[in-house]
Length: 99
Length: 273
Image (tube, rainbow over all chains, first blue to last red; front, side, top):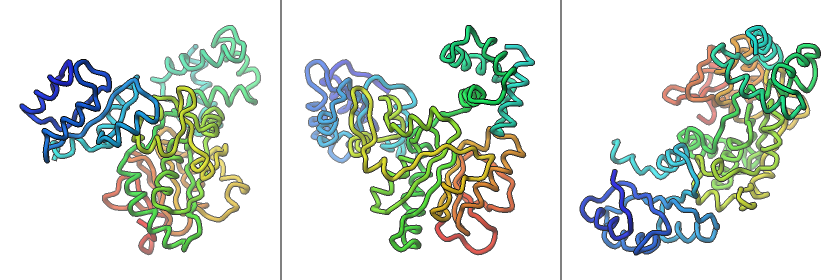
């Protein structure tokens, strides 16, 4: 598991080793979550990881926007470990790794 | 709370609802009774219990029982059970019912997440279902009837897509839309008693869910509950228990390789499983 403090650093990490799952905030320095998602799709080709948006945004229109842009699921803050676990399970992000 | 108080609480839970209250839950019981004592105007838990022992029959006893029940639930708990329901049980039952609604009883359905999970899957499949969800806890039933869930509750087990499709934001909470709510009827029922006639008179149920209830019950009560689940279920109908729930019953047989799935009867092959 690795952490990135902004979108550019996150994309660099993905280029070095594409993860199975990306937890993505909407509001980030240098690049917002939607821009990050668009760039991630470009660089990941057929290795696109599962993407969970995690954001303070709870407006249904914004959530729908993130899903339409390609996020696999969306987590509204605040959340807890049970929610995160159920979301990761639901998108099947770790299925391939476990198998 | 004294050990004697706890003994009497155990007896109350057992006689009225069939639930076991294990000795390691004494502290938890005291912790949970605090808010009830305040709500009912008692100075402390001791005063509440003294009144309860003086007048053990009545609503105060039920309030105490309800607060000691394990009411934890969430949407699509044990995801694979709901996947099995949506991909195998529901299509088979819809075919067998020839367009008539599939009838489902969620016994011990708590605050509604399980029943609404079943209803959502039916809407996705375009299958007509009638769902009865019963519980002992009036507080849980009130919540289920309002169908309003916090941000934490709505997100546990439910995808954002399903949340947007079936729930509307109400301030900082989420309420099930009418299309979902009209599928589910919530009623109070004590599983150690037979299902009241007025709740069973629309005909037998094709499926009964009773998940994570039996494990907390005393053996005699568990057998009684199984009888009461057996009666209103169609022949060869399916009973779905919690994946860890174990039963010893001649009335149901477990489907091999399907944790928690049982079929009524021991003879012919089941209709839907």
